Length: 219
Length: 294
Image 1 (cartoon, rainbow over the protein chains, first blue to last red):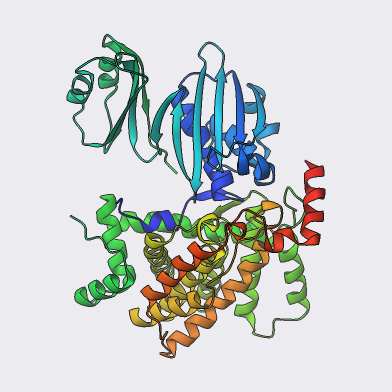
Image 2: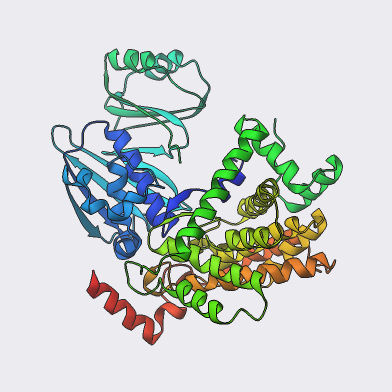
């Protein structure tokens, strides 16, 4: 069990009105932005269930967009984000869906452009979030740890080749794959920082298709 | 290895053994956990305290309505009345209720607040803590101690019950905020650890069963007015506890009851807006109006 902290109780400092529908939305946007890690030109936000139903009154749409544009949860510009110069630079739209197989507060970020990618996440309460899937890979990114994420061909020895390079403590490690020998994903949550050099080395490996270093969320 | 303190009984015993106040033990444990000094940890807590004060200041000077147009000008009304005729219970009552409305209205107009423990209950702890500190000339260091006390109370409760209306109803949001405030106020007024625990238990016991049935699913009705009500509720609990009035049910057992009540509460009354106030005739009409505005 993770040790709880009083800071979780007396924070975040955030733009209202709802920790799950506003602050959570910003944080999901920030995480999706970090996962995509390329200039965002065109994006569709697909909101589900409670996010779709009460999102507008809670500014969930504004929060998601603000996160994608890199604003923090306590940024007072969130309120007027639709009218901002930042927002005018990208092409975005919102879709609203009902799907009770999804979390009540679920969202898909569908990135279009040179690099297409779908990032899915849930706002699980009190501003806590989890990125649950990237394209069709299931992942578990909470923004609490610096995380190395890679997509690769499922070949023997990959986990040891990668983890051997990492000199800080690994907090958690999660892998997933389509099928034996097919595409696979690995999420490595770290207790410290990973050097850029490590990321570059992993990128240079045969059979590695994509590597991301996703910094933990500051707020 | 940092000792895991998950119950109030454990907290009481360890504080007694180390002869420390709750806040002293909590800040040391917290600093150790985060691998920082206690001074650095106090700076983090002060950031939240300062943001709470800023939210009050902004909220007192605004009557901008929320996106739905349902709420936003109640703090203005209250201040207008107090300017003409002071509150029956005096200046502290005026400040607590006005600060609570100021903060929660700042929240619904997407202003900057501190979720403590949640955004919908964000006004209870700051209104009690800051109004009392102003009226009693409490120095900042002691205000930080009180906020740490509140945080530690919330932390221990959150080990058993997720502080979310969708999980356990409003008793776990505004209810817990009121219990945290009772403890914080008791700390400010020089209460012993035992009196603090009793203040928390007394406040919490009287809020068991509080449902989360927001109109239109928004953090507005009844959340806005509930904040000043439960801030005053916290004062009652602190006053009783400081007189050594004890909760006959120990605090940990009260929290067990909170957890059980949350589980037994119908999902229609847990932030899904399918029953209670949310499905009254007027609420349904408000919902139609709100959806048309979008």
